Length: 420
Image (cartoon, rainbow, N blue to C red; front, top):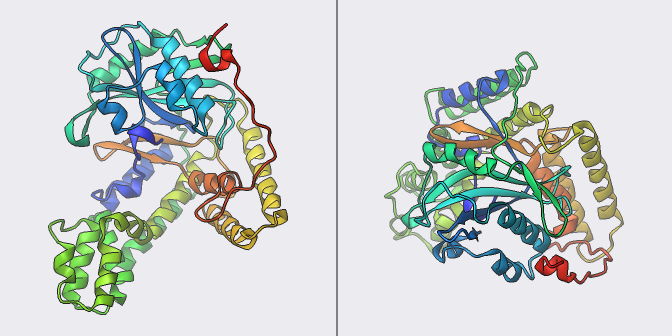
């Protein structure tokens, strides 16, 4: 999702959930006894309407602090952005749909609508049938980066959506749907087998860590860190235990400087490698891999037969994605440059990661639902598939993109300023 919305957590990132909580959630997802909305493969932006009826946009903390930027500002903000057309046309649609509209959330400047832009001329992984502006939720931004979600404001969001009358055609002659959160119908898929498999794999994880369903994912994380990479550090048991506490968040007051005190340089460097805040997310994800693989495999099966409201033919979209995988594979094989072997290796690794999760792509990015007092998502094999198909287009790490021979197009006055 990105932008001000930051990262929406996966199930496994709710570290204070017990295994029992997770299993109950998987059961509800399987039987369809949980409310879920569609997660879209678009670009995130927030907007509000000021007391003069002007729509203002934000993508980051700097924009929020400044009160947001207008559509005319967006022409400059996104002038050199790779996704310029997506953001300019998306902001244009929001501006034309809501300028002067009654804003039901007051004018403190703290309330913003978390919104997704779907632009068919610049698709990401999924090819949607229509341009769309999807209003997800109202977010109140508080000091120090905190957020508040008010149920009354969420109900008023639907009134804002209704004011757009379902959509519009902008001055650049592009048609847009304007929608609120899109409910996903989850049929009862009990008996399909993937729930039983997920439970069995979770039981193996618990047994390996000496845990039960009453234990939390954080406790699994700590055990996995402590008995895995941290065990190899040649230091005392106390230091290893304390480092596991720190990285897993089990004991936040643990200070890295205290753990390194009196240690040889090489050992101190290893402690820093695992204990530095900037590295923690990477190490936690690696330690949670058995849980992640289990949940991703379950999610891929749950999502496989779901339909996006913006994709008319899911089967055709799934076939298109499979063809895209074959096409990108061919491009990797025939591309000759100094990064060829490294690119092939990374493509095969990403392909293997996706194949371990799913053999069939879903024609929907994922679903979002309530879990542990907040929101969580399942996306199945979407992330590795997105990385796989994006490798040649965008590059990754030190591996550059494969250049296409395309001519640059100078925007017309109509495209740039919305003139007629």
